[in-house]
Length: 311
Image (tube, rainbow, N blue to C red; front, side, top):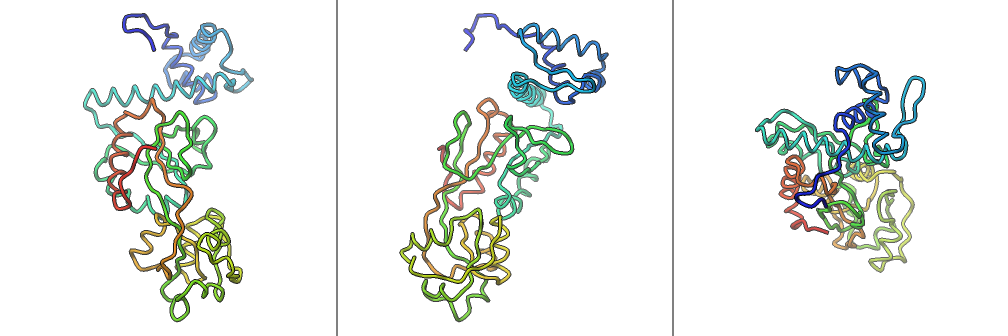
């Protein structure tokens, strides 16, 4: 940390701005158009920043520039700082100009729980535009790479065991795992766990296996017939609701299905899930108004599952 009265040794800030624009566009000419300067001016600014560091930030090619590894590392911090500066400036000015809040989220969690509740957040914060993206679109630098070009993730929701060093972590849910099926499928044939041996079980690649679940409840002697398999939990739950068999559901993902009656729990037996849901953000972004707004909102939403806790 810099002592209170010590001068900060900062790089030339105009050069930092030119560097960020060039990195985002992958081209000095387009960066110059954005900044309303010449291509030569952008090139000069970037070169002065590289001289200040003593190493290159870009690899130069005929029609484009590409970040070096050190350039990628520096860009991650520069972009976060510029975003934070923009947000704080808007807050101090009392402006409510629209800005985006990009959240990386597991697909099944988005489909089965989050999207149906986002309307209340939008009503509370009309100045924020929510952008959801799946976690498999995130690169190593925390960027979403898509057709519109790279943009940065503000928050991440992850299913795991709270092992994310260097990030601010808020635990949202613990879960239970239990069988679910449609009401019609259960009629007349599901009273005891042993009845599972007569029914098709739906398999979910993202979920605890049926073999593990049966072993955990002391029913591994049961050998049910093999049923359909799906790569995502929301597909498996849709299949169960459609009457294709019995799926293993987690308490968060099945909550709305159970509340609406689309799915039921034919047995009381359950197994505690090994993982939970967590909300993650960079420490340096944790106090941004838009981050705080979403954290407050989602903490209110999860009260029905118990209070969130810092992991």
